[in-house]
Structure formats: structure tokens, C-alpha cells
Image 1 (tube, rainbow, N blue to C red):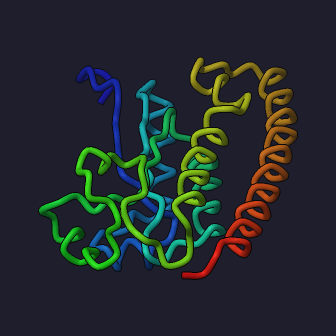
Image 2: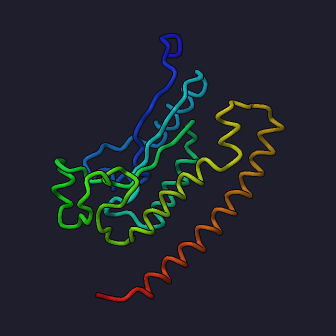
Image 3: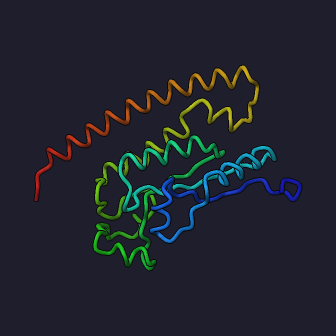
Length: 190
């Protein structure tokens, strides 16, 4: 592949939950196969980009957090996260029409919540999206992986630092989750 000048490969993981993917008509790629593809690409010097969708109907705070953690563990070179967006004119839009809250089509951008989710507020979806990018890119191993640094001493140090960063992210996420839950309880009921 590399000899044929393939330098980058993109693929849609979308969700860690096979049941979620099946409900939206996607065929899940088995985890061992995903890992093997990434390993082979890494060995060949091919950059990998994985894409994830947050906010499927079955998603919860915890399932989205599991998808974020999986994105890190999977180890693609880069990752892109988007909020589920029912684009006008698609079957998803027709199916979700009763829950769509946005009327400005310019906001159907993958970064703006455009529908009422069964268990997550717009603020929670926005936070989880931002948190996905923070957790994936703001860790020492992202930089060493991106720069292809393989020295064992550096990798050992980076793994230790990653643990500290992961714990810091975990505390921040739990604090924000409590804060958003408190906001939800304090909000007036219509």
C-alpha cells in the first residue's frame, strides 16, 4: 500500500457500541479487525484518521465517554468527532423530524446539537464533543505517536504522563457531569 503512494487512510468507527451501529443501518467492523488495520498502517507509515459520531438515540453520557476512551485506546493517528446530525433530505432527518429543534440549516454542521436527545441536553452534547477532542489531542502520547517517536525511555515516560492526564480529565468530566446535572435539576419545568 505504501509503495503505491497510499499515505493516509480514513475510516468511520462512529460508535463503540455494535447495537447502536446496527440500529442506524451500519455494519460494525469487529474490534480486532480495526486494531489490525491500524497496526498494519502504522507499520507501513500510513497515517490513519478515525471518525466518531456522538449522540445516537441510545447514547448516554457513559456510552459516549466509552467511545472517547476507545478512540484513544484504538490509536489512530488523528480522530474527528461529530454530534449526530440529521441532515435535511436524508432518511435520518425524516425519522428524527419530531425531535429536531433547529431551523437554521447552516447549524447542521456536526458541531451544533440540532435535535432533542432522549437523555442528554444540548449543553451536555456540546461538552462531550469538546471533551472528546480534549481527551484525544491533549495527552502526551498523541504528540509522540504523531511524531512517531519510538524510543523506549520516552514511551515509558509518556505512558506515565498519560495516566496523570487521564486522571485529570476523569476528574474534570465528573465535575462537569455533576454541574450539568445540577443545572438540569434547577431548570424550571415547562
